[in-house]
Amino acid sequence: MTGRVVKGSVRHEDGGIAFRVVDRDGHGESLPVTYEGAVPDPFRGGREIVLTGSVMNGTFVGEPETLITKCPSKFTTKSDG
Image (tube, rainbow, N blue to C red):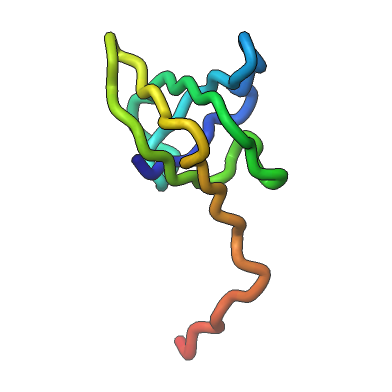
């Protein structure tokens, strides 16, 4: 799964975390996610993530040690227009 963590949705629970994710553009209906494992330092609301797992009872359950946080680029390209 790839998506953007909803700001203010991250909670620490029972040795793991729970949060909500929306599509990469930050739109659409959010999906609840649970995950147990190492959490990358840059993980927080508003960041794009990649996570392996499956949906169970309406919640995406991430496989341990598969959470990747994509960091926003420090560099942007200028448009010629």
